[in-house]
Length: 215
Image 1: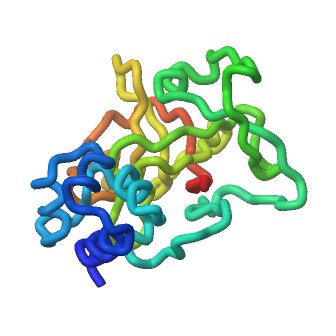
Image 2 (image 1 turned 45 degrees about the vertical axis):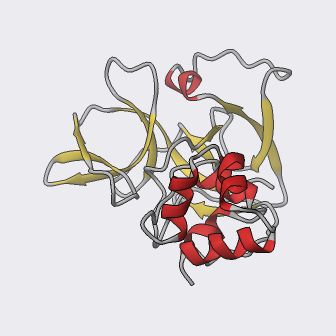
């Protein structure tokens, strides 16, 4: 069953016309038609589409996830260890705040706070994934709308998912770190995007230790 078939099936089950569903997502009917006839395999507004169809974004894209799941981690970095019986809270911050981390003032009333394993450092934070560059049709995929746990206390190594700040930027980027033959690359998981070669002294904010979606 393809993503086109899953979208059409869900829309039909909800008794929605293409025009009605497109309006709920915020796209044109023509764009929805391209999804349903298979011309668009990786919708940019996947999270909005999943919400409108009342299903899980990962299931919609890959057909591999349960439509109703508990809050659970879909990615865990092997560099991190967890002690599930003990947890503490870390804030959900914005990407501009991440670019200034740890020089961001934390007001408990101004941030959402989410549980993390007890092994997580006090410098860690949660970040919302924006865009589809880390969404893959196969293997590891971190779609838009997921929350990622960023651990600044870890030293990044090749193959890690990281949050990094490019020189002169006021924002951060979420990519896979690849070091090959002395060259450093920021590599998207989405095959539609190309790896970016960056300086070896790239400012790495932290290593991503978990990725999860909250329901």
